Length: 332
Figure 1 (cartoon, rainbow, N blue to C red):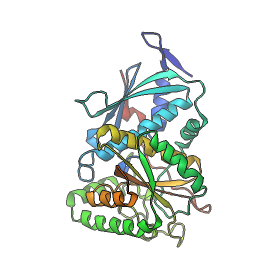
Figure 2: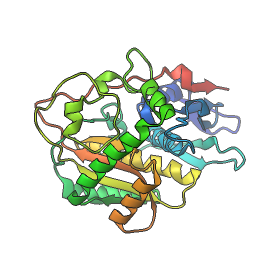
Figure 3: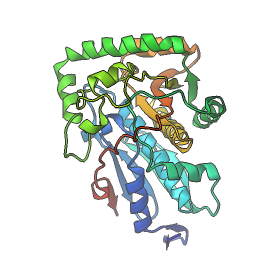
Figure 4: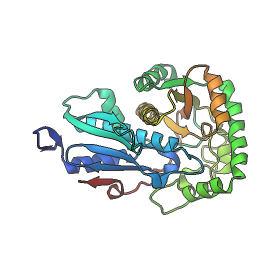
């Protein structure tokens, strides 16, 4: 464990450790792989800021998904620091008049973090979004209580949708794609972030499903189609669908939704499962209302996650690009 001492003599991670953690944790998922976060380390504390220049104005005008994305990286950061022997103390949204200042992290040495946190840290580099058809998740009955507990510790509710909800969610995906297709601003924004090669952000063609592949899944955002292919053959999707929801509908709670999302994704990755986060259904009020009726409990639905077992005979999707750490981390 590399240590610097601040002016009060408390141990803190050195800049090299901070840089390595941020570089790894930037593998966190974000809407359209927009990576809408900025970090600053002053030698004592690490601050997280939302990058408003990466707001998706058409898909996410309130910045809800932006903050959820930042919350996912916040949890990745905490897991990565724990693996390196640091406990992180979080103050969320420390300045009411600066909602872009999402968190301040303080540090304490942590000699023996729990094995599950180490497992999450090890899963960061393996996790990726899988938009192709999946098998039923193995070990599902044992996994669900763990996922619910991980969400609950962050004041987030996790519900498993009945299989009967799948056709309606697929229909909503098609309806929303048609509706959004009439919005020129949304369409331009989507194509700016998806389907482009040789970029450090956005969703590259290799991470997108072809029309035929998406038809076998049905539930999800309709992106520009990837290269024509039929990976995983004629297999239809048997992933399970879960919903994350919470109250109130506020910036601090959106941040916790992102933290819960990260914990669920990394727990699934550690268990050998594949995942795909879906926010297209929750972008519009009718989709949130439909999900709220399906789960029948308190809370505003914020994200849907597909969870399944990847077929053994096919390789995992390639990793999507990330911005260099020097673009997202500043010192001083």
